[in-house]
Length: 163
Image (cartoon, rainbow, N blue to C red; front, side):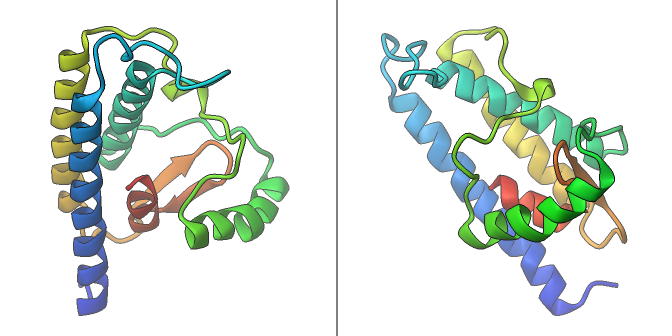
């Protein structure tokens, strides 16, 4: 059974996610078609690639919250423990990834399939599906998400992180 505090935490995390997803859609819609496939800087992804990355991430997280296998862990146990106590705590506190952090291969946008409007619509649909699946996991004991560096993390912390 969830405490009021836990229920509020889930509710808050899902509300932050909804607001973040809406803001991203609005920003993505405002990008000109001429700029959509242009990298945001040297060695950076284009808005199309960023959107595809988010879509792939949603698919992985939705799958894991639905009982499928998560991303493959790529760090040895001891290193994972050290990174969880240092880097992960800093990420949670600052609410941002360290400079130079790399995405796991499962969610890197090698190819972008679809137009700007198709990718944004897919994002909208996956964001909604994510919220529904996340909501269905509220109160489920021991629900975890897998991170390629940090290993298993609490689902609520993971959901809050992706917002």
